[in-house]
Image (cartoon, rainbow, N blue to C red; front, side, top):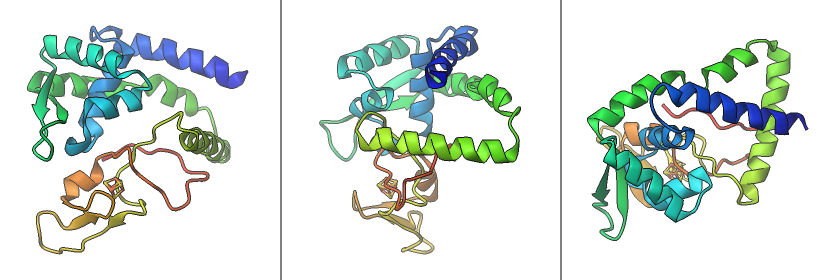
Length: 196
Ligand code: SF4
């Protein structure tokens, strides 16, 4: 019951926090997702998975953001069948103004002491990874801690790291951005952390 109440509160808080920017919570989530996801993974399909909506709904969100000049589509240089999403300069500006997104919830968490916070993180982490295992929630993370990540295998190169899953070298910037294929060695008790 507490989780249900929390879920309702988060929806209300999200709406309130983005109202001044003329965005819906889903549009705000989309802009943040594009900003913090590795650029070669920012496809419409992956956005739909991240938002937990259908492909058609995700396209509707993107169309509206594109009309507002905040998002642009780009053909993937790796696979011409895939369209990748990019922020326009105006989109980047809006994302900077979204920095306080989630601040109300963080302020509420300030009322907990360290012990209570650690227990909450462990409990929520278990729920998050259980939902992830059931295919109900996508958890995107930066590369470090992923079983496929090979750090600094090409020292001195502009792309010193490597992902064994997609068999590609990665720059430090790419490694710091979120990936929906992140696979932790031991997911239990972990919470998603902000990329970068
Ligand atoms: S699968 Fe793992 S190592 Fe590969 S890009 Fe994603 S997070 Fe990084």
